[in-house]
Length: 161
Image (cartoon, rainbow, N blue to C red; front, side):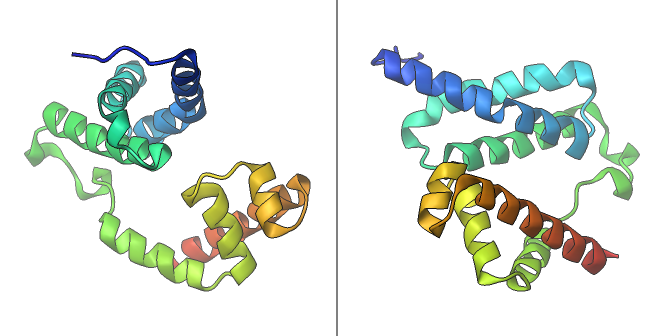
C-alpha cells in the first residue's frame, strides 16, 4: 500500500524528480532500447511508480531511475519479442564491457573534466553547486561540461570503431 506523503515539501520534491528525469527515461526507452513510442510513457510511469514505492531506500534517485528504466526496457523487450527473433544488432551492448570502455575514456580526460563530470552527473550537483566546488561561475561550468562531453564522445566513438 502506498504511504501518504508526509509534507508538501515531499510532494514538491517528487514532482521535481519526475520533471527532472522524465525526458531522460523517455530517451532510454525510445532511443536506446527502441521501445515503440506508444509504450514509452506507460513504461516510464511504471518505473516512477516503483520509485515511489522504494524512495525511502534510494540514495541516488537519478541513477536508480535510469537503472530501473534499463531493467524495465529489457523486461519489456523480452516479453514482446521471442528470443529466436532477436538479432544481435538489437541487443544492447554488454554493460560491463561498455563500462570498461567508459572508464578508459574518462581516464584520458583531464582531472578537471573528470571532476566536473562527476559533480554534475554522478553526484547530481546543479550547475551552480558545481561552480562553487570548482571555484568558477555557472557559465564556465556549462562550457567545461560541454567540452568534456564532446571530448569523451569523440574518444568513445573512436575507441569503439
